Length: 425
Ligand SMILES: *Cc1c(COP(=O)(O)O)cnc(C)c1O
Image (tube, rainbow, N blue to C red; front, side, top):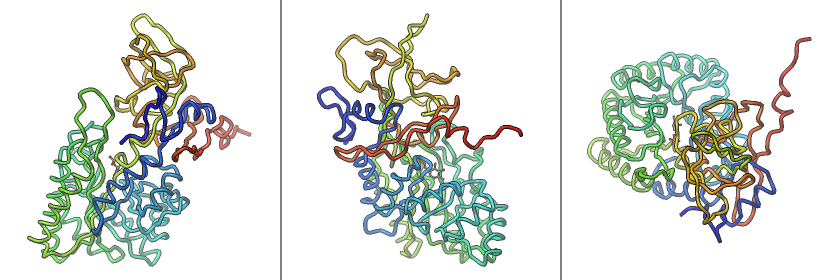
């Protein structure tokens, strides 16, 4: 069920008309639905009910404190990729002991911070990282729980920028090196080998590559078990895609179906080989938790009829939403107020001085200057990838809860953008 619906021809977030939000908070503004967020989280939590499982929301998809707080209150853990993200989890009241730390380049300072908060696990991606973590933990008199991010060499069949599980990617430890790397980890005195993880890519519409990756992890868990290295958890990463509404796009697998198949395989394996021993299962979903919970609300500044194309110039730009410029991502663009009048084909573009600054191309719209548009499915990798290019303050963020709108991030003002700068004395 979508929580963004037209009521009498006017787009609403839950019970609030988007025009009212534009009036109160201005544009461009990210608008999120609390009910949509909770429903997406529930699709994971319900499928995990009664099992030893943990959903660690991959917060790089959307790290607003209000979103983190709502998820933490549901019992979510968090998948972080920087020390800054850990500080956000703590500021939002999340539990650091439910945090896993991913990423290829963890600094000494980030390791220290995470160890001081006793996080659940470091997802380690290389042998030098194992040694650095061992040294840092030793110096602090601590033991770091580690998992190795294994590269299962499975083709996720997604955009090359968001495919991460192939041999040519920078991520993870090669499958063929995994056993040797585990042996090395098991010998380091300040590490505790706790788990295994992978993350093969993002926006996967089919779960077959994920189940294939699971089989490869299971192979390794068995081989490690034979050597006396017993893992406490298995982390299958994130990656389930969402529907962006493009014509002809394949439907994403429903989360419940995917988790059902995954648990079935794990149960069958446990009965067969793992001696029925329990293993905790961790998920790191990002996009499928927040992607469809948000829209980017923008106002039309000008209509410009070019020689070959019509342009609809809006007040949102690639600095607010980078996905089209970065991955040529198709994102749905709709009017806030529906119209029966004739449509023209437009490229919807922002004010930034780059030809790459477009949000949507060749869209049939009835628009005039001053109208409001929304980019749908903008909740993931929208605000978190926003920049201040062209000294544009980042958009405001609002969460709608039933009939109420809550400002959860103020619009940045230009003076804030250069407040940390200084001229030479
Ligand atoms: C980005 C990322 C995720 C989340 O991926 P989604 O496609 O948004 O679900 C999970 N794990 C890791 C390690 C990531 O880098």
